[in-house]
Length: 601
Image (cartoon, rainbow, N blue to C red; front, side, top):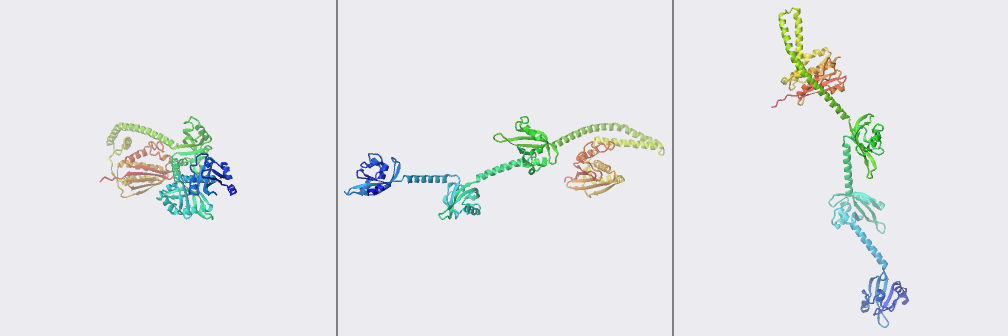
């Protein structure tokens, strides 16, 4: 018996009723040393008093067998202790204690418990969703973050629902997930749309792996679910900001272009396409910015941007230059440019805004033309005053001469040769008088009262007087006058002067003959008169000038350039307009528009 106890791996000792150690096996001696004959509490806790946790009374008095665990700090071990009564030959009772070292298993339990607590804490506190699901389509477990993500308050409700029907926005996506994860045993970055408890879509990414049983059959799946809604929102906001920036660039009427530091073009907006003729897809990543400028200009612009003299470091403000179009011609432009730097101050790219200066040059040319016309108008006004004064001064002596000649006619017989000479002198005097009237009309246009006028009647009268003259010049006259036209309120004499001037110009334009077509028609609130000839036409460069004062293509003997200018003034004063269309070698059409007379009811 004693040898058996010594062979045991567990420590064994025996004490009598007064706690004196009667026996210790070798395992017990190795742990505590040999304390045979001493009190057991001196051995175990190095104390003169019994251990506070001692259960000897239960063994000695109740004859009970007890088991418990104790951490003995003195030896740094945890023991599972079994104590039982022993009946001696003299019928006395002793207590046998068996000490089993369970220190390692307790440490393992503590580690497992700590790991479990860590897992539970991670499971509950991790901000992304964690799940365990069955193959059949139910969640077996889910952490609070997943419930919050999908707007569920009750975990019981969450675990009871059908995943494909209640979680996936599109139920067929669940089948795709199962196919993917079972094929490779895991999935990562599977992007899909879930829905919340109230049906709102949520973009998520799933990562997980398959759970197998002991026979390799699929039990279900477990992993994490990450909410991508915020990232999607940020991506959308970034995209919207990019789109807005791109629209601002593309909507600019000015040419905007950017290039990297090697000159490769990165940005080319519609303004640049319109100005230089290159399409964006032909230049971005395919063309160098140096090709836009004359030779050496790109290098000069970059040198200017790197200096301080043209708006500060990295800037060039409003610099005039020439730009090369796709057609190879150079156009005047004004450019502002800047260098773009990164966070470390290194040069990344350059951007330029180019303004087309051709329109400005055209405006300046038109302004100069207006200045010239103003000057001519001032000259015309001065000449008008002088003409008026001369006409008035000459009228009185001229009427005196005419009266004298009329008196002389009464004294000379009609058959006399002198009478014929007198008639010629009187006729020339009358012609001078008519010329003076025209001069007065020029200085002070006809202000006769306007009256209700039939345009067709005026046109027929003029053609009656001048059709023969046109025919003598081999000009065929074609009428296309709409009957029953409403009248206009106008000065008949001024309208006659306008149409006569156009007819005269048409005759002069058809020296070799042709066709003169006159048309009248009503449209809306206006009446339109088209006077078309098949003459030599008007050069394009002169079309915008024909109504200018003193502009004429005729010699100084034939005209001074007042006819169309005065006519234009008459028609505009009537609330109408004159437009001209002409093709060199094909003819000219003047279109006169006048408002119809419609008295208020």
